[in-house]
Length: 338
Length: 80
Image (cartoon, rainbow over all chains, first blue to last red; front, side, top):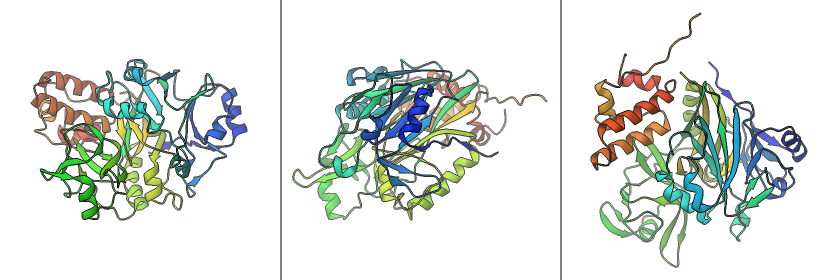
């Protein structure tokens, strides 16, 4: 049976506006300048100008909006914004059967709080908690530009609040969140930390206390590859944000957790080839995929501006898949309930 | 034409207990089951969860994703 992949796509502002005015329930990704032009309606949005495309090379596009339309699949919905203090309730507030789509602004307190605390959220696994970390043009990000989340219902945008689309599914449908991770742990650099943290100075490498920054420099480690931890067979990545040459510390896009073991990912031949081979297995077993997104680092290091991978979607500054993930392709599948 | 019934193995099967304690090390295709099976074994070994509660929770999740876990269960349970 052929997999039905919903054709989410890039659209211009007038077309998206038309869909909003028609009452469609959507998640939108685009540059702030285009999201700002949209009328109020049943949508939430996050900024990002980088997109990968199904049958053409990916691109930076500040004139179009990537539209994921859930209208045909869901039976009810709510849109809500959350401040950091209340985000822990995000799964409690959802419907009994459905999914929760979460958009967070990048590298703000609420993003960091989610990353550290999401594994302890009540009702976390009742329904898929899927979503993304919004982003901005990387050149602008490096000089302080902030990503934004948009509440389409009110027309408000935020640099410090999360937006959630809580979606209810008909009783005969069930939503399922899955990932494609091209990275696997290697036997190199068995790393542990003493506390949950985004920044690492001292850690344990093969059981010996070590300055991670110096270890990376001395061993010429390629930090385009993430660290990987094995969660019962799920390889979960933590990507390097940067090396701080002044403080001699290493900063990550997601936290490293005490009690977990991390190792450097194995080098992969080519992102596109490795991804497509994993994606083929997915397509053979899935019936219906209604959403997908992929990390900006896969776009950059995988050269998705010069390739296509059989899916279209927005890139992210981090993926929400119950927890915060990095360098991972995530998707939402809809099954018939048994 | 009668509708094909999708089921999961009964909770009494000993494989459930082996799954939550990682005596059967099976790599589920489903992401949430990958996350949860690791969490169950960790919580059981730390005394934070009983084996029965872990089995109940895992069974409930598998009931929900019954269609998606059929391939996994053919490997683990063979038949039921």
